[in-house]
Length: 365
Image 1 (spheres, one colour):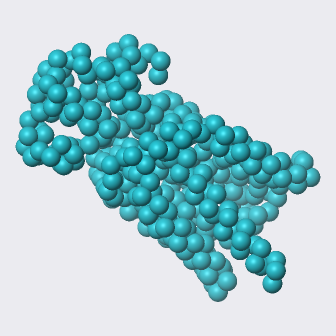
Image 2 (image 1 turned 90 degrees about the vertical axis):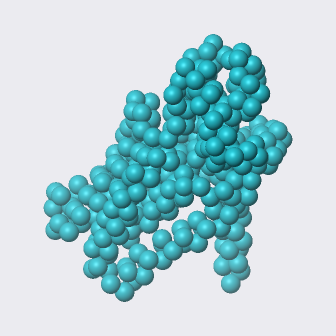
Image 3 (image 1 turned 180 degrees about the vertical axis):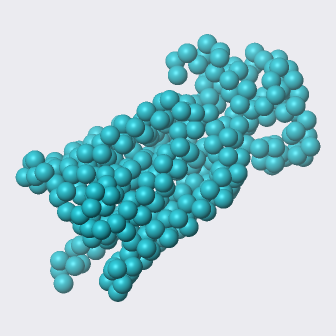
């Protein structure tokens, strides 16, 4: 009984630490740190699988990893400054806009899809862990390469993840011991790409559009859903284990179809939005900060109201949000937007980002 109580206390504390870490990951880190952070976790997970399968360090890798994680967390906490957190708390109240909703869909969906593999027969065997670990290491570097080389890297990673999971579960209908069945273990390593995409997307979008209050609200929603993602395959595994591959395939297909049907919305609000180039920038808010620091807008011959509109555009606000922020009508917000675009010789917000990034003030980015 005492062991159970201690385990509950430990799990409660671990959840609280994870929530605090997620807050810092989302609002304090910049894009490069966020991507490398998610990639590092995926890399260590893959290395842990490889070590478990090959027994390279006699089971010591997980202990070394946890010790390094605790030490690294302690060091990071000492490096944070009070201003890093007060800046987030001072933000205007955010709303659950389409960009955040779409991000949460993929974040939760990736959990529901991936967790089924844990319950499949043979998924914890030494051969499966070696396959997952070895390919997983390569997948982590592939994800980083996609981020560096492709314009819509996160969108590509999301699709690759879903396709890989569909192939993994589909191949489980092949006979045990067959080459195709064994191939599923290697393809499943692309779970790492889903993990990196889910956390990078969540961090970027919340830093762009969210605040602390909304972040806490979404944590309350996500955590119960994450628990449900374990209960469904666990229940099927206990009462109808032979149906597990079929259930995994059908649920993955349904979630992926939903993702594809939402493609126009993902394109409009995320991956082809006016601010989408920020996914590949140093930070989601770096352009706005640099503009404020350098007073760059003062040199563009804009009216005071046009400067306010330009700053809000750089923050990712649309005409309705700008109107609410400045207490003006949507028509007036659009009027000022058109005027400042005309003065700058541009036609859309992405060109506004490009115009400002081209200035020498951004040479340090």
